[in-house]
Length: 146
Image 1 (cartoon, helix red, strand yellow):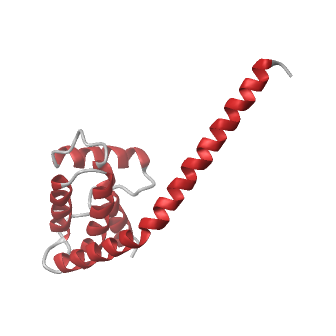
Image 2 (image 1 turned 90 degrees about the vertical axis):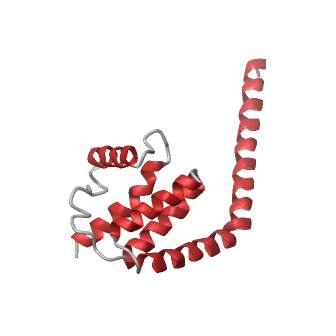
């Protein structure tokens, strides 16, 4: 067997072992932390329902954005998405709230709408911001199908 082939096989084996190791560590980390994440999600949902019972749809979005601005990042997007979704379900309707919200399957309109929402919120340069508006689209799509 040529030397270059042996070297290539060794490199491939090392890469495969590294990938397996990273996946294993990831699975272990998720399993270790999932209970805390679930408890936090329930806590956030409870807060959101209470907040939603005192406000309208737009108030939920405004509060979710305010919370995200205090603590931006991927974990905050997840937490605030849970917040907005539960809050929207418990809140009063806002007139015209869903009028310009595209369906999630309208990919180009969705991207443009989300970027515009982020710019209006002062988060135009935040890469995670667009994900904050997924619950709004889900909520509006469900309301339009009822």
